[in-house]
Image (tube, each protein chain N blue to C red):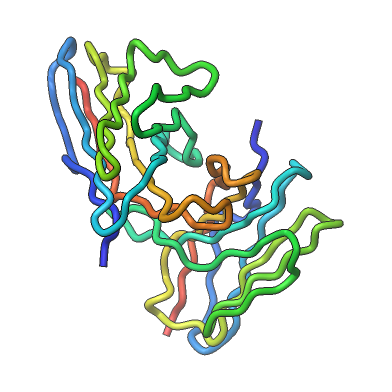
Length: 111
Length: 117
């Protein structure tokens, strides 16, 4: 049973514009959410996280928004750069236990 | 730079062989490491939680006699796929959490592509 869902398998954005990646979850006990970026033949690399006590966390070009009532989070990348092209995984955990992952969204940033 | 090292990156072997995969935290001690498996076009699925100095905790449906986990030190966990068969072919990846806090992210190795002929 998929508790974390990324409904868009792919996204294409023009360089300089905003990329918005979405993620929905079903388990209301999740209290920590993360985004990972993955290049081919490499493991996921931690990008940004947010605790359930917050609704926004920003780190440079990356901002994660959390809407607990909707059980929805999103990752905003602005401005998008070609080097951002990768697969982005949303993940969630409950009290620091293991992560539940979405299936990923493949982002392509075109020049 | 990488904080978790996983070795080997790829294994091709005959059916019936046992395969050991190592996961090391490079610059921190990890009391807990995690082992995941990814099937094609699926998300990463947790197999087991590896606890230093104690038995691993396996997820439902994962055979602990098939997938042996040893976490003998604070920087090393190993996963041994015993008597591997073609259905065990998959992508296995480990992670480690720096620090004990629940709000610490997990850092992943680069994974091991296991192919059983």
